[in-house]
Structure formats: structure tokens, C-alpha cells
Image (cartoon, rainbow, N blue to C red; front, side, top):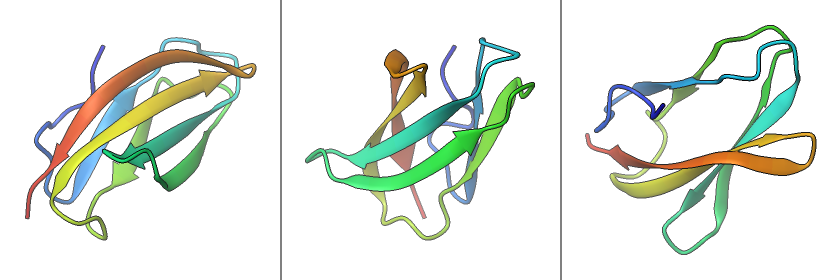
Amino acid sequence: QPNYPNPANTYTIIPVKKKGKTGNIHQTDIAGKVVLEKRKKKNATEVTISTANLSAGTYLYHIVSEGNISASHKLVVTH
């Protein structure tokens, strides 16, 4: 399930399915440069990401659990 709102202005919420497991959110710009890494808490069902400090544009985010990418989605940031 993709993030919402998308396009995002100041924040976006990323739903995560693997409740009970820790993981990471890696966000990259369109060129592949990592612009944000955030840890998912063990029992979290969603992660809120601030987009306020990101430039307007298109980004990708990857949900990584146990060393494997479990999902990837596009995020559009507008200001």
C-alpha cells in the first residue's frame, strides 16, 4: 500500500505491513542518492516522514526488513 498524502507538502505517512518486525525506510532522490533513513519501530503499522526539508521533486522510498527490500514506492514532494 503506497504512502499518503501523495503528492506531499510537509509530511507523508508510509503504511508498513510487517508488524512485530523492525526495519528501515530508505528514501532516495531520482538519481539514487539517499536523502533520508528512518528506523521503523517493532510494532509500528505506519511511519510518518517529514518532507518539509526536501526540495520539490520526485523521490523513491524503500521499506527494508531483515536486509531485504519488501516494498518500493514513488513519492512526489510539492511546496
